[in-house]
Amino acid sequence: MSDTVESLFGGPSVGRVVNEDLVSALSELLERAKSGEIIGIACSSVHWDHVASYSVCGLVGGYSLLGGLEMAKAEIISVNFGGE
Image (cartoon, rainbow, N blue to C red; front, top):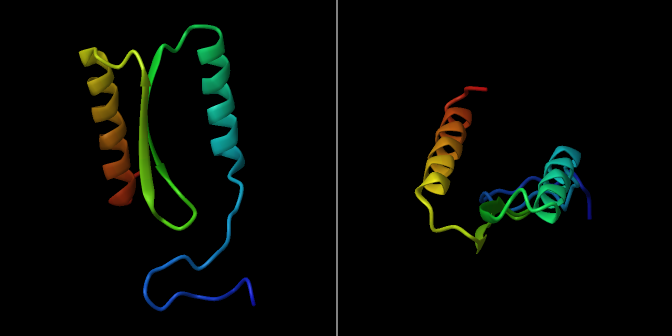
């Protein structure tokens, strides 16, 4: 099989690729959690096959987390409409 196959129906067209920026950001979050700075997290992830998943862990009952999620949502919307 070739690595340059293009999907006709919108499915995965490439294999898994390590995103170093993502690994770095997750490593930083892990260190902050290990130090006790981060006590709760809500995370949405896009997998290599374009399927999304989410996880919620720790202290997530406060309204401040909802504000953070709204800001993340606004940034994702901006990216989808061509913003930076």
